[in-house]
Image (cartoon, rainbow, N blue to C red; front, side, top):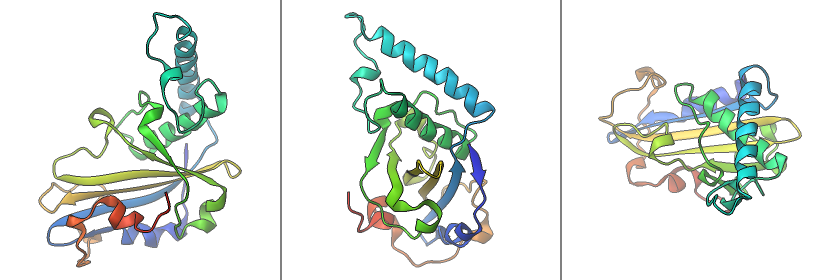
Amino acid sequence: MKFLDIASLDPINTALVFENPECRVVGRIETYSCKLAGVDKKLYKHLESQWNSDLSESVSPDHNHSLHDIISPFGPMDQPSSRRMLFNLIATLNASYPDYDFSDVKPDQFTKHQSVPMVIDEIIELDECSVYSFNPDNDSDPNAEDGAIWSFNFFFYNKKLKRILFFAVKCLSINAPLQDEEPLDTFSDSGSDVIGMSYEEYVMGDIEM
């Protein structure tokens, strides 16, 4: 996945990093091209081979768990388009969290959303997007760190533009160690009551699900 440097996102990303007396919030919005090249192309071929093998084995009565058994937000996993959508989100996570490998995450760890109004329509054309969220378990959660309160990862996929916009936010205790992506001088005192909010209340507010 190629990272797309879009200057109009800079002020939004600046506003998404702040602290109050009880917690720190670190958010970011990133955009990626879905055109495959290099490492991504090799990973896609590897995962396609693995997924096809799983689907083939599932015909056996002794094979109790496979992609056929998973309720997928992308559609039936025996369809190439469904597997490609899963790969696009996996590759986005790998690009956004380079210290982690998400190759083993399952389709049912994602959720598809119907409508998410945001001020990023010019970049991704929201009316043309499919919207997904990543719901990791403890082993695949890149934000499972000391002092973590809540986090979320949203994907806005525009098939026509061959582009994904990735929106991630995490809320940390004010006593949690600083991370590399959150230098001290980016924080400002917002006075917000973030600590008592779920992520839906903080960012997703009036979203129609």
